[in-house]
Length: 593
Image 1 (tube, rainbow, N blue to C red):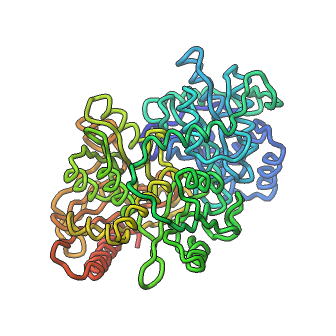
Image 2: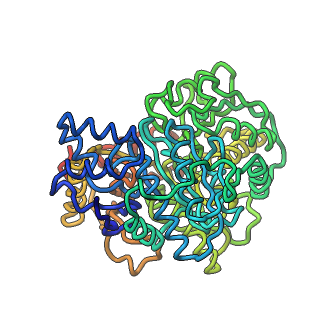
Image 3: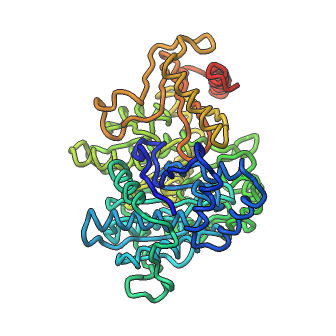
């Protein structure tokens, strides 16, 4: 058979692992590795798939399938659904769940329940059933959702149930061929160190998946309970408690799409509960469909993803477009202009929501947070509004653990957190990004603008003139496969070892390598593969590898003085052009152009 060993550094943010490493990796015989994996795989279809690659002598493909472990990005696994140790499949899910169960049993003795939910991807129900079956066989009580459910509702259920952990089977906005396994800790936030290393060590002690005990029929088992509509009802009550008070509720017409995800009926219900009943869903994208037939890539940030709902908004003369990603933890917004509809960036949504919530907050000392790759403009808004602000590592696991740390230290009370990739937390009911409550909050913001006789664009311009016009851009360099991962790693090593003195004629005033000096920073700014280049008063560049995709990401945040500028659009376009130039110059400096 085969021996298993824990990953070398599972808690390194963005690069740790919640999986296992095999001693027969690419340096040895991948064919032997594949044969051994087949013996330990309980799924006949996966066995046949891998055997076909063996029979066809597809060694290059086998090398990719058996190239060690899946990367641990946003508190779990994510990858293509295929056979092999380096893919998402039943064997990986079963072994991961047994490792998590063993960790909970060893650390808690008698752990509380584990909440499990899933999205609408073709493999998600099977992965959910395997997860529940392993947990129940380990003697752990399970509360599960029997239909595809938004990630924020599952995270809410875990916090509400005092669960020892929560698991969501989802790949969020990844392509249809992918799936994932997302883990929340007992505090309701995604897991962070040192929990990850403990789980990885436990997984390393698990034998082949075929030998892992599972309950054959989870439905009706004594340790397994189905979660029903009472969870969502409680969620609506709790997010109500965190809503900004509105003096009036003017009519608001909303065009909405869940982008074939699981959020449709939940978001429409939440909006109606909040008083927004004139909602027009894009019917061709409303029902959950894990194949995402009307979009090339189910991510509302992608060009063309909002085309159908934009056509709907034009036909219905809507005031606002709201869109979620497939697991409903992100929110996209588009607004009408004189020249048609225009989407807001993630940072624009973030600073608008932050200012709106701070303006209406009843909290004595509110805390607002964003990720380090999100706009520095949040800090200026927080200072103006008398709030505490902080930046964290990328990912809501860090934003919410930072919020809990700051609250425990007496710094204030959490009000809002966001990251530029369309993730927003507007309520303490969910300790993660939440596209449902964020949709309600942005509807409230829009309604307040209508009541004031201004547009949302007017409110954004007001912020720019007060705090400076900040723009943000991102350039991603895609390098798939093991060779691509090595190329990205080499680029980061070069940047850390020999950072440029100038980029496209702009002087670099300071450099911070976040892989160093972590002992002098709070835990939510732990060691990570991120390099920050300060560009003086102009702004900054940040470079990091993605935690969930085969990409190197370059972020640019530039600021222009808008206090006396008549043409904000011209200033914005000039800054965006300069940011593109800086990012592309960095790509070439790293040898990736």
